[in-house]
Image (cartoon, one colour):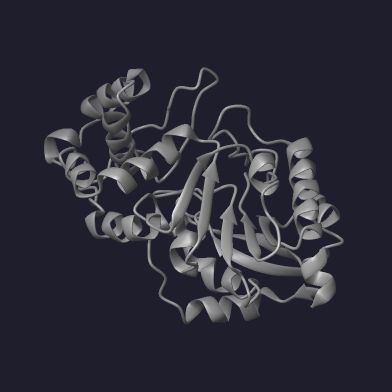
Length: 294
């Protein structure tokens, strides 16, 4: 079933979502109402194999959450915030000073981050790099080195309130650094799975899949869908976001629900140059025991 995105957008417009503490390209803060509407009322747990900024879990409000990602730096930040709380927040805040907001210091700390083996220090540096680097990008080179350039902001915002809010969410979360295959293999009856994978490129020059080693190609997209369908046969409900392209239309042609959305893009530092892109939110309902007995 195809749903006009204007319906979902009007719903989202009435909601003021909580913002995550990390800037994140493609974060779903503005779409949480549309995503929430796809979750069955009997949901007992949210599972996110591509946790990203955590915006979805932060706003859906489930008591049980499994947040996973292959990005080790990201999961370590969440683990550090969960176990150290205020002490970790205070460590991060020390980097948000005028003397740290220069290109020379940024690149020195980026080099330090790539070489560090101290988990807390590296996690705090990631928060610094995320807020001082270019517009919420998270990108690595072929050797696994974080390589986002300096963002040149006048006074980067320190997200203390957002970190405190996110810490409260983490008390209800299990965190795992893992591939989507192992996470989806654990999904079943009563689970709502939301997948926000690296997108199919909207064009030949718009590929942002290098936020973790190895990228995410068409074979991965197909494997993800197969793992999601297996989860629905065990009773899970699954929603997936992706670009609206001929390729994704073919890939998700058998979805129970296809919602077309127009979403603002925030990669450019100049707000006047930011554009809108077409996305799909597709839903696969349970086809296993829970679905059959409904």
